[in-house]
Image (cartoon, rainbow, N blue to C red):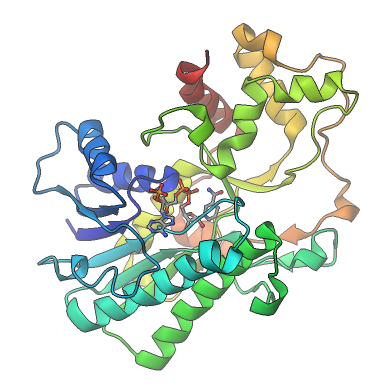
Length: 346
Ligand code: NDP
């Protein structure tokens, strides 16, 4: 049993990390931005004793010293830092995306170094965004691995929110590894670098409008947006093609990253394969006949994968071997995701 600090416990991925930690017998202190979010977490875990699940309010991770108090919680042995903005809704990417990502990361590492000598392992949720090079997404000659780095520089960010998000993850992860080599702290580091993460919603969600960014495509599908697009003559969306992973695999990867000493210093490139909208639609059509009226017709065009000579390659076999479990298949992820959304429809 390990006593863990988990940042951003109200988030999509973090809620699954929290479940996995509790299932595996760990005790957790998790940070959230408000008391209302803390209350929802305790309501979701009514049978977990207060000393195994504590919540602490950290309103803004970008503020200097944000984590200084919470890291003083007695007995902390590991920190899982997931909190970081993931949205494209900004006109000021530096303030809204880059600063919380980078300052949140360096802030927590410095706070642990200063005040939490019992912490031996830090796991940071990075991203495939810190791996891919956006100029090479159609390049079949590029193979991404755990060793690949996004070459983005801060001055390229300007007002492109997608690129700014990718830069935020790249710069935050780089800052973390740089801190490890320059400050030689008492703890070591593992990063988890997932591409698009899909899966059932287990965190508190007031309405589907508040869905996390990576699950938005499933909401669009079940609310009829793909059908509308077909009716406008555009077919099933082709956009969003890329690599994906199930959220429960990402959660388990975080917890194994914390538990396994031999993962010290690794980047875990957790990716199950390619997401293809046509396949998603076929799975939903087969498993949810009650959603028929919201879905595009059987004849709808589009949503196919680009040919192999128009896409990059990836090799994450080192991660798969190090973690030692099978990635969840697209059918299970899709079915479980849609099941979790259905109660919010109407
Ligand atoms: P969510 O938006 O659900 O979670 C983000 C979390 O970070 C929330 O708890 C959010 O709090 C918190 N947060 C954001 N900004 C701040 C801030 N300034 N101060 C305090 N807390 C903040 O997204 P995900 O669960 O998808 O993302 C979790 C992590 O996983 C992020 O680091 C993201 O970059 C990474 N990731 C996600 C992928 C995906 O496809 N989902 C893919 C690869 C990496 P609140 O909800 O209260 O705003």
